[in-house]
Image (cartoon, rainbow, N blue to C red):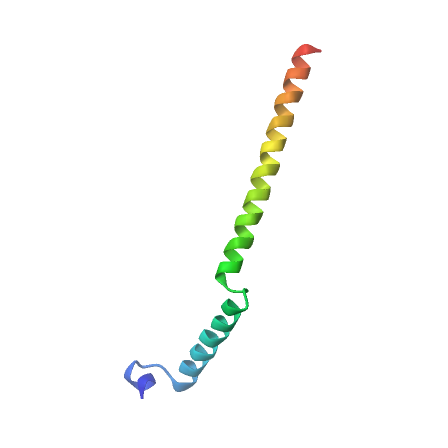
Length: 68
């Protein structure tokens, strides 16, 4: 038996198998790591856009302060 050969209990081997199968199902449904990466990339893009907008506002306020 593979579990004895590698010094792992049969129960642990079954738990690993179940986690592997659930992960595969989630990936096929679009809920796996790829979906998480895309969600994080999207959030990163939104934050970069917000940062750029704030930096622009700061520059405008600095120029207005110098003029006034």
